[in-house]
Structure formats: structure tokens, C-alpha cells
Length: 164
Image 1 (tube, helix red, strand yellow):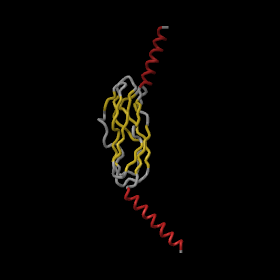
Image 2: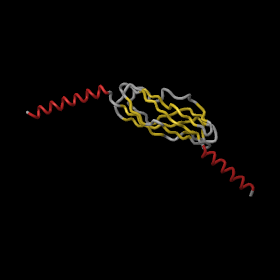
Image 3: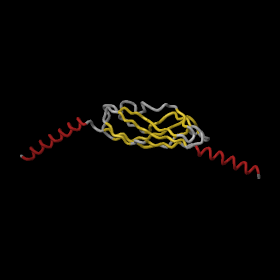
Image 4: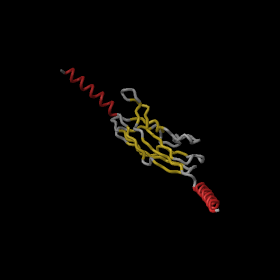
């Protein structure tokens, strides 16, 4: 009987340690709109709900915009690597993205997650939930004015031609 109780306690201990490793991540400014040639700064909150410290080694972008000439990966990150204490929380800059002057005016949807170099008891890397975000690049105001002026000229010319 004592062996079965000990075995049950051991199974519960192992199961609870596997289930306890959790990083909860959120972006505080997940959707941003910028002009070409500007900078988008994303902030986030990362919480360690585990009962042990977790070393954070990176914030990884999934499905980054493909039309950027310069890399989408963060140019500025917090002091990576850093240790998130048990029950601790990080709040700060996750990514500082320079948007190239030739970026296409469109909305780029992406995912981002935090990862550790540590592994759970199954050998899987410890990572946070994947958070969705977007970066909308709008045309420069001067370009928009030129486009509108060109469309207006076309409409006037078509109107004159049609009026004849």
C-alpha cells in the first residue's frame, strides 16, 4: 500500500512539474500603422507562471513581412538573454522594427512568441503562446496627393472626352 501511495505521489509530482512550465505573452501595441522609412516599436508583457526561473533567449517572429529589404527581426531587444524569476513578469520593448523606405503600402500580419533555451520534462523547448500582431505601412502623404491628383486629372479628361 505504501508503495502505491508513493508511486501516485511521484506521478503527481512529475505531472505537475510538466504542466507548470508556462510563459504567458501579450503585445500591448499589437497593431501599428507607420509610414515607409519610420520605426515601429512593439511592447509586450511576459509572465512566468512556473515555480522556477526561466531563461528567455529570444522573441521570435513567425511569418514576418516578406517584402522588407532589411530584416524584420528586432533591432533592439531587451537585455537578451534574461532570467524571468518564478512568478515574475517582464514588461518592455519586444521589437524595434525599421520599416524600409521602399516597403509596400499594405498590412503585414505576423506572430511573435518568447522562447527559452530550457526544456520541459518531455524535452520540448519552453516557449510562450503565439501572439498575433500587424504592421500596416501607409503611403507617404506626398505620394497619396500625387495619386489623387493623377486620378483627378484622368477623371477630368474622361469627363471632357465623354461630354463631346
